[in-house]
Amino acid sequence: MAATTKIKITAGRVSLAAALNDSDTASRIIRALPITASANRWGNEIYFTVAVTAGAENPKAVVAMGDLAYWPPGRAFCIFFGPTPASEGDDIRPASPVNVVGQVTGDATALRQVQDGEPVRIELA
Image (cartoon, rainbow, N blue to C red; front, side, top):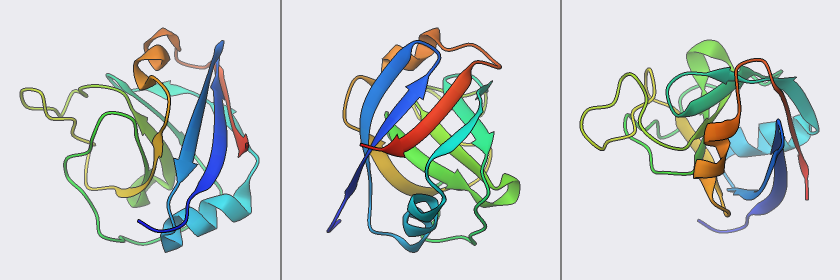
């Protein structure tokens, strides 16, 4: 991964530093910043619809702790901080393959305190 763009994610009372990669999908997200939404929880994932349209770009069926991703079927931004209902064992699995667009640089597990419906904001750092 070459260039990265530093961003700040605020969800409820949690604030985290993160970085977006240089993928085409990440570039589309950067152009849409700042993004504000309401958190949807699915296991240890927060997701929300964004005004970005992108197709599959090197999609991953298993992601890593702290990965930031775009889910093409739902036009959603996803933040992974542990197993989801689709996970098997310790794997972190999205509902279907996602485009990984970045990574939380802080402790992603802090997001476990964020509840459904709490405000989320993604902005340039």
